[in-house]
Image (tube, rainbow, N blue to C red; front, side, top):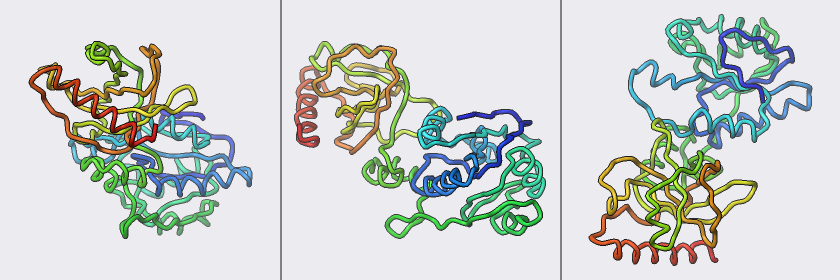
Length: 305
């Protein structure tokens, strides 16, 4: 997959394009991507156009946490088979591009767009004045095909990044998995921790989530960890370990069943399957160990192992 981060570029091959924020890359996004990927059979390369930062954060000047980081999006897009990913710089100048100029100069001129799949709520260009009607209306002038894609719905509601974000904040990880089409996950390299788990008899792998990534409620989750082409069942604590630490640095700490490999420095993906209990502070390490033993036993029942 080619990743383009420059303002000026040109793709030689004709492309099928999807435009959007793609935060979370949920089931609605995946439906859109299926349409552009299907155009490979007609000789078109697939291209995703997005910005290098959240438009909401840029225009509203407030911190909006990501469902998927830029690095995580890149991994997902590559796994899906996207040929070109454009992470276009968002700044005062690019935010003032007029909608038709965006179509003519960027989509057609730079991306060599011959097909575009879009939802009916698409907005682009200065003040978001560009929409699916304008995109369709200019198709003949600029020589591309437009396909407007119906929304994917769950429980009577359109699937959107806002919907996903709400459920993450509630800790409803089973519903989040249905919205995304995969478990909500954290990726990164395994870092050293306090090694308390190892001393108590259950070694863990620690990730420290990106500061811009949205977190579910602190607590214990049934989880799975992926690396090396395999998936392992586990129990994950997200929080600050209040029994043994006075800090506020959130970690994603996972115990894997029947696993004893040294994973320091290895890249892993930890997916959350279901919320088990909130994070708790215990008076003694013995009480903490007793609770973790119970968590692990109940996890075996959850996974049937």
